[in-house]
Length: 187
Image 1 (cartoon, rainbow, N blue to C red):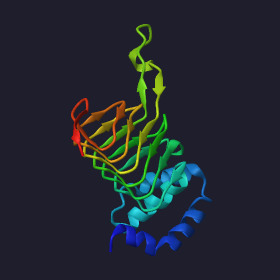
Image 2 (image 1 turned 90 degrees about the vertical axis):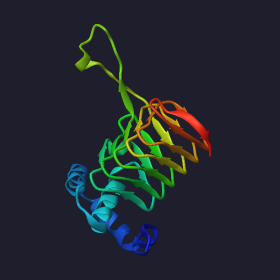
Image 3 (image 1 turned 135 degrees about the vertical axis):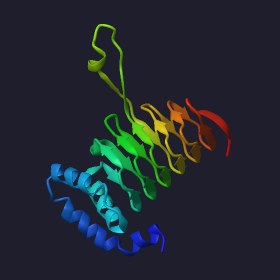
């Protein structure tokens, strides 16, 4: 049975669980997510989904969040349907992040929606942050070890090759790779 089929089979139980868990105070739900971040098995996947569904701005159906995925600023993140986020990924929604449907984010990838400014007169440690939204359209595959930086807009039907650093606009129907990521070919 696929994950999508399991989700459909247990959707009623998941919906009830979401309603019950949403009654808990938000700080407790964030704490529970951090506790269950390491839980293996399908039960861990279900608990993480239920908690994330109650914490982020919008969350679709059949969202797989693997073990050890760090999420910060939940309330500024939107996730579509049929999304998978794999081990050791880091997602910080401070500057807002939209992830479309049918998106796969491979292990050890980062989505960071802010960057530091630089002012010669200010100590480096205390530079201000510049917030800039990340948008990932439908049908995108982000390979392992990628860094998706603030202000990035990845259009649909796109593959980002492993270990790429992505900034700015990425056109649809394309394969990008490298540091910085460059278009390799149309797909």
